[in-house]
Amino acid sequence: MRLASSFAIILCLLFFPSLSWAHPKLNTLSISEARELMLLEKLSSERLTKFYLEQIALNNKRGAGINAVVQINSAALDSARTLDEERRKGKVRGPLHGIPILLKDNIDTGDGMANTAGSIALANNIPDKDAQLVSVLREAGAVILGKTNLSEWANFRSFHSTSGWSSLYGLTKNPIEHSRNTCGSSSGSAAAVAAGFAMVAIGTETNGSIVCPSAATGLVGIKPTLGTVSRDGIIPIAHSQDTAGPMARNVADAVYLLEAMHSFNEQDPLAQHANSNLSVHLKANGLQDKRIGVATNLAGFHFGVDALFDNALALMSTSGATLIDIEMPDRSVFSDDEFTVLLFEFKHGLNHYLKQANLPHTLASLMEFNIAHHKQTMPFFKQEIFELAEKKGPLSEQIYLSALERSKRLAGPEGIDLVMQRYQLDLIVSPTTAPAWKTDLVNGDHYMGGTSSFAAVSGYPHITVPMGHYQGLPVGISMFAGHLAEPVLIEAAYGFESRLKAQ
Image (cartoon, rainbow, N blue to C red; front, side, top):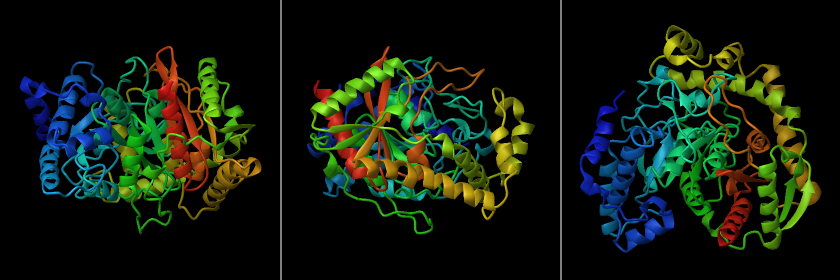
């Protein structure tokens, strides 16, 4: 892999302490604050980019050893300088102008960085062009700082995988408590933002891979409506559920990033035109007059989480929201169908992606590679999900079509939609998941709770926002609703965050 030039920047920073001039609050700076400082010429994109590179140099491989950032874009500083020059000439592209961001390492870039899914097999997969998402981010003025680790193959290789571990890059630590897991699969993106390596990052989600790591590291994560962000150039799991989304320290930053991410892919039959002006919904009184369904059957898995959830509900009530206890249908009614769909679509989508990538070119040859290099690729868990997927046939098979129809209907029209219509709700809330568990490479992940499936399978939006800490570990509250409901979710999320900070 061509990483030598990337990490040359970091080595330079390590030996030039004069670069540690940093503004004392740069590590907590928001997009709005950075934009204001740049407007006043008190901060430049180059300076901000150097600051984050320094933080990565200090605590990614060295120091705390978070191991969240796995590749540095060697063109990042040049990009920052170009954007600074544009600003000096009066051209400002938008809220992201000059803001450094990190990308999950399953997203193509055309700047020499590999796109690996954390797999040794794709270590030399150097795309020749940007994913459409990356192109629109560059157009919006973002500085692509580098790429982040992930749970290998987005946690879709084995039932016994450990979130945050990949055969190519090793284990990412949770910056909140190093022995605790980051959840996954957008593990590195979450850990990087929580560790102060970037203001914001991009994750991807098929089911839970944005919201769970965000909750585990005390971040805001948004899984947008399916199809509102282009999936072109992203290593796939399942086209009926896959999406990229923002991860940030606060709701506003996540929303600014999401606005810039909106990208309509004409080649994608599931593409959706999104509301392009979401930031107008950043309202401090966003909870006022909201009818909120409290999914009581999605709580109750952890007493500490329940106490925080009760406090969050009380805060919502005193902020003008009307709370209605509801029960969501049992998600087990569609979970088997969902898995069937994922297996079929993974084989289909991955074979298509690998045709354009460096070897291997098929799922079957990928499995053969893993077997041939099993000491490196499979020291902790095997590839039984790959094996199940490889046995699946084309997407024209009736078993796939029936599973897709049932899972979509039960999660969406007969799930979220039905409950919201019955109780005339604006949104539904529940705890996102339990506090981060201790990482265990021997036995793999051990989740407790989790509410991502309804929004993931239906393709509807889902936001997680920090609601407090249990024994020092962050816990998130989930907010989800129907198709293209981002505006109402953003109002509720920002309103909740504003009230919680004011306490």
